Structure formats: C-alpha cells, structure tokens
Length: 80
Image 1 (tube, rainbow, N blue to C red):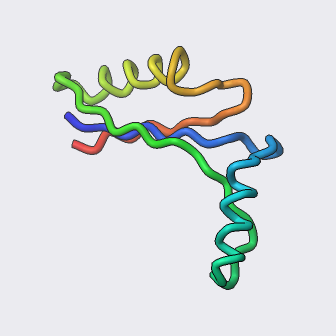
Image 2: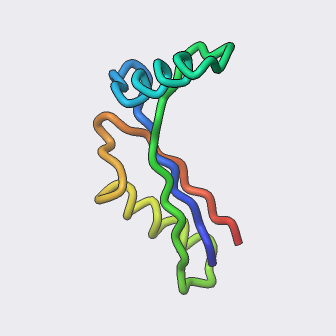
C-alpha cells in the first residue's frame, strides 16, 4: 500500500524559505507570483492491507515524527 503525507506550515507562521523561493521566481521573470509557501512530502510504502489501520499508523507517525504539530499541519492520503 502506498501513501503520501504532506506537511505544511500553519497559516500565520513565517516561511523564510517560501519568501526566498518567491523572490527567486520573481527575479527569474515568472509573472503572477503572489506568494509561495513551502512544505515537505513523504511518500511511504506500507506492508499493511487495511486502509483504516494504515491511515491511523501514518497519523501517529506524523504526530510523533514527521510534523511539528505546534507550527505545522499535515495531510495523510492513502494512494493504493
């Protein structure tokens, strides 16, 4: 089973990397950039066959390791 955990900063949290990317895009002449926020993506393969158990395990992993839940949100998607 494959899954994806996407971690992003919460709204209102300063994102210096996003600002740097925004500035770089503008300096490259990419038009229409209003703002950029960056995050992390974890593609994970699981041996589990039960989708609900896999999702629960991934949420536990995100809470304990993959995301700093004080400043970050995460989304778990079971892909197959």
